[in-house]
Image 1 (tube, rainbow, N blue to C red):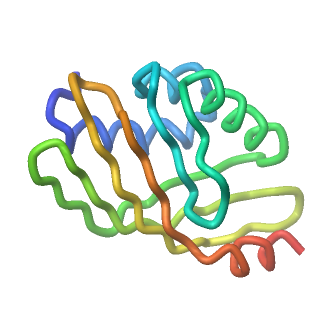
Image 2 (cartoon, rainbow, N blue to C red; image 1 turned 90 degrees about the vertical axis):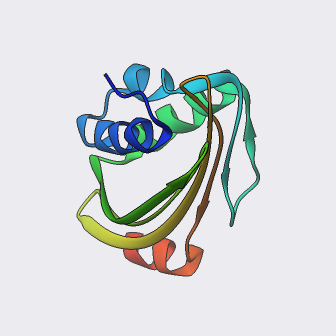
Length: 123
């Protein structure tokens, strides 16, 4: 069982490869905020669930490869390569993620990436 913020985020990132939305959403606090910085933030677990379900309705798979991860207290930062398969397109997207964990749940998640690179990979 993942206990530290570092372990929680490593487990969370690994869960995306399974595509199980329920298991992914279980990592979030009820009032969590998820913000892909090029887009508007998503607030609360219900909106987060809807966003993730929408994503998986178009993506065949996604894999988070953590290149580097550091944790200090309840803050975890990682540098990742997210590999997304959408239709015939596979995109390897460099991402920097910042997570805040409280009482074993993600309360804040911000991902920083180049939206132009993301959309170009889907063309």
